[in-house]
Amino acid sequence: MSAASDVFAPDYRQAPYWWDAVPRPQLEVKPLPQRADVVIVGSGVTGLNAARELARGGRHAVVLDAEDAGYGASTRNMGFVGSALKRSFGALIKRRGLEQAKAYYVEAREAFESVGQTVEAEKIDCHYRACGRIFLARSRRQFDDIVNEYALKRDHLGQRFEVLDRDALLNEFNGSEDFVGAVYIPDLGSFHPGKYHAGLLDRAMGSGAEVHAHTKVGAIGTPDRDGWLDIETSRGRIRARDVVVATNGYTGSDLNWLRPRLIPFHAFAMATEELSENQLDTLMPNRRTYLDSNFNTTAIQVAPDGRRILMSGLTGTEENTLEDKARKLRKQFVDVFPQLGDIQLGRFWTGWCSAPVDRLPKLSHHQGVYYATGYSFIGMPMGTYLGQKAAWQIMGLEKGRTIFSDRGFPNLAFLTNNTWFVPLAMNIYDLHDRWVNR
Image 1: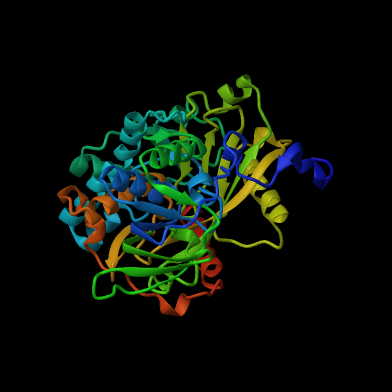
Image 2 (image 1 turned 60 degrees about the horizontal axis):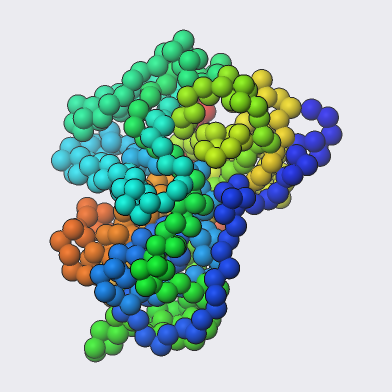
């Protein structure tokens, strides 16, 4: 590598790769209604799935967003569509017993399937494909751990998987020799989240839902004697029978009940310059999605609509500037693919995610407000699934039932508005990853 400036390709931009094909929509500014059946805070995947279902169920649904529609994590993620919770199946068995662990993972599978079902039913062109996923191991101990995890899933959930030793892995992933093996899951998916979001936005508005961008929500009141809630916004007050908060990592300080129950953290992602088909065929011939098995996960795929490699990693850690972080993530990329030592960055971006302390997604209800949140890197399936579940619960439908509504939502008041905790926690997890991989 020559000068540091050579890290960045001539077309480099600090913006999500997905926005190349789908820039943020410029919605027509319309008057804010004074009342609605349901106000939805957040115009991402969760909010739009809820809005579509509510509008088709005859409810006046109004979606409010502080930024452009889909500005947040719904169009900043890696485009992975999976079924694994951040808390492993084995860990859930130890903590909550086999039957409850199975219940969580059965619904996680349903969440995964809800994406493909939505894409098909709504006819959304977003490059959805069941490409399969490779879970990479960096040490023998890590390899044994993931094989044991998927053996448990096979025995209790019917999960299909294939074990890949180092030689078999080379037929799937030609990267660093640090990877000693992997587990292959054949039916997990990938898509273009920008195009998925655009399709959801079109279907929600086409069904009668209103979407108002640049309308920041402040305080949400408690229900009055008739069950109405007052919602303060930057464009005035609106009243609603029900509210769905679908802000996840973008939850503002005015949402006092939710804010201390979530741990927000930054995720970072990059897209390389364009590569040749021959290079991509050599590195990842089957174009699957790839995750290492560290707690602080590195995720990789070939862009489903192009010839750039996308990678996310270094979650929650801080640098002086985003350019410093971009250089550091690029270095991690070269560690994974040492044969691409001269690779340049085409795009780099960041976004906010969130997790509850138990790392399990939530659909909670408190004083007339439904909170769908805490997705912990399974946002596309869970946003789709819990957005629909929230709508069905509001409409009193039996199909709105979900185990993700059945558990408590711990209050982490000592973390409110503090940023010191996440880098410290991620440093601890990084030390754990290094210990496991020694």
